[in-house]
Structure formats: structure tokens, C-alpha cells
Length: 264
Image (cartoon, rainbow, N blue to C red; front, side, top):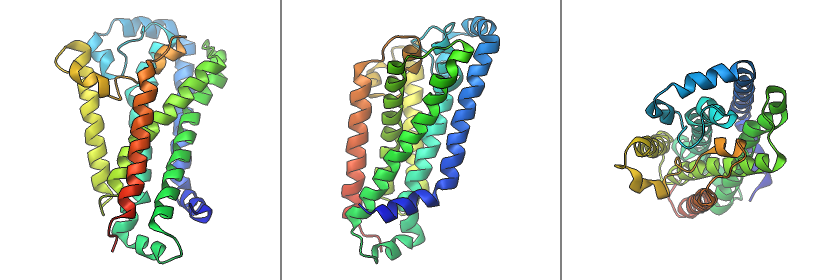
């Protein structure tokens, strides 16, 4: 790994990193404020919605009248997944395939850097980015929550932070391994988005019908239930295994593929 390349990678992406992190912090604060000001009324309103509508936004196993259910439907469900996916997919696309397509990867490899070193450095940058995104998501809820009636214990914060990081890495890993295969950063973004859309539709259908339940054991969307942790419950232990295994396999796969491909 190259520390110089790592610093350069993060410096080049500093603008998008900053704005995505600011967006997460502000969105978290805004959602907390809404709950503090209108929690009871909003809970009653959400309870009046059909289950199919609530499932659309990621609420399927949490009481919608609770703080956790509200946060999951309004922020930590579909909206959060879109923000995180956009952030890591953009990062992954520029990390490998974007530079291959633009020709800058050839210039980079002309330096005393091996392909493995370049790929490992970009993977480490992705890991750091995922940690930062998860921190910007859940730290505001942990720190500001008590002011708005949501007291999140430290253990629950660490659980959410760890699972959020692994979830971001699972998506980022898919994008990274695809980025190592193509010369155009648009293809990894399109394929990753298609995979996530398929999982989301399968999860939504499984919430109201048995037709798609066969996908649940490997559906990363199904296991994402942060509202349960906020309410003092626990997420399925399978979530740690699914997210962790997917992240490790895809990120390691991106290093393996990139180290053996032609970038000329």
C-alpha cells in the first residue's frame, strides 16, 4: 500500500466526501427534529398507511409508532441506502475504472507502484470512506438524540456504526470489483444500482407476498433493520455475516482482478 497515493486519493475526493458527510449529518438532525416536534402525530399518520407503502421505505419489522420505526421509514431505510450507495458507487467508479478509461491509470502505474499496491490503497480508501459515512449517520443520532426524546445507548450506537460500515462496504465492494473489470465508470454504477434495485424490489414484494421470500436469506436489504436497534432490540446475527462476507469477498476480488487485467 502507498500512503502517498492514499492521501492523494482522499484529497482528490475531498469535495464529494465533504458534501456526502454534511448531507448525512443534516438529514439525521432534521429527522430527529421532526420526531421531537411532531413524533406522536407523525407516528399516528404512519400507522394509518398501508403496510405496502411503509415497506417501500424500509419499514417492515419495526413498530412505526416508535422512534426506531420513524427513523427507519423517514431516513435509515430507502433514503439512507440511496445516499450511501451513491457515495460509495461514485467513489469506486473513480477509483479504478474511471482512471483506466481516462488514461491516468497508465501514468500512475508508470511510477514505482505495483498494481496490487494501487488496488490495496484504493480499497483502504474505500474502507475509510465507509467508516466516515457510517459515523456521520449514527453519531448525530447518538449525540443529539436525547434532546429529541431518543436516548441511544453506547452499545446500540456501536452496533449501528459497525453494521452501517459493513453495509456500505458490501455495496462499495460490489462496485469496486465491477470497477476493476471495466474501463467505463458508468457500467459499475449501472450494474450495482441494478443489483440493489433487484434486492429492494424482492424485499418489498416479500413483505406483502410469499413470492419473493426465497431471496430473503441472501438479500442485504432484508437484513437492514436499524430501527430495531434504536428501539433496544437486536438485528439478526446473519446481518453481520452477510455484510462482512460480501465486503471481504468483493473487496479482495477487486484487488485480485485488477492485479491481473490489462489497463493499456
